[in-house]
Image 1 (cartoon, rainbow, N blue to C red):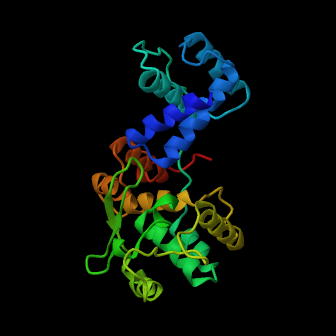
Image 2: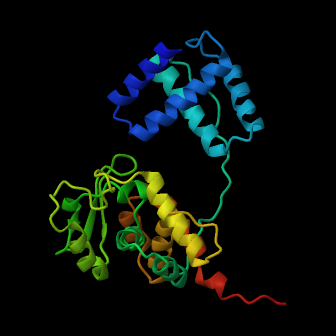
Image 3: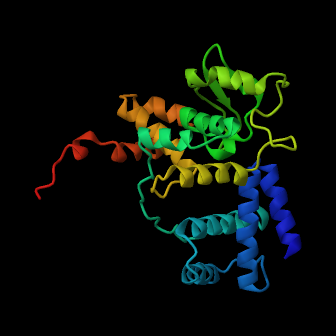
Length: 270
């Protein structure tokens, strides 16, 4: 098993997959190999179907099951070099609307923070629409105070994009990075280096709890709220797509369901 996993890791790195995707694919393939038990290089589509059914019975999410299937397809196509097409469709995912915070809720959450750096971290994540993985790796050189932009490098899908910097954060950001080199992290940990994803998520969770806001929100809800509030302000969905770094505009268009003014103006007959 270990030899096949090492071969898969090598191929993923050669094809420049992100470290997060590599970790997820290797986990999925390891799970499948454990289920299969042996003879890993032999493609058995019925066995793959049984594995996916086993995952469903274990209540593994549709997203994770699709990731496992993509990992298995990658293994047989790129490592085993089996030309046979795996005729298994992805699992249909539930279409949940994103959890969006109102402007007043965002304000309450930010005001609940006593730590200046933590408040600035969440403020920039909301004000620029950043993913948690993007804000923790942000470098001093990625901030352009003249143009009021944030350069997000090698984001999801290994793509760069530009987002907006809130003007009201400029002075606080300049104070935070004073004395830092251009390659230093904007939000460094106490020990130096970047914050961990979990630390940033915990900062949001604590702020949400202390604020008293009762929505089932996560750090990513700040990004959802950024997109929704821009659309409510009349920003063209194509510009919002660019700011978020979405490859497909359909990903951005789901926010139009949350912000649909015609639906919100309908009064209940009761």
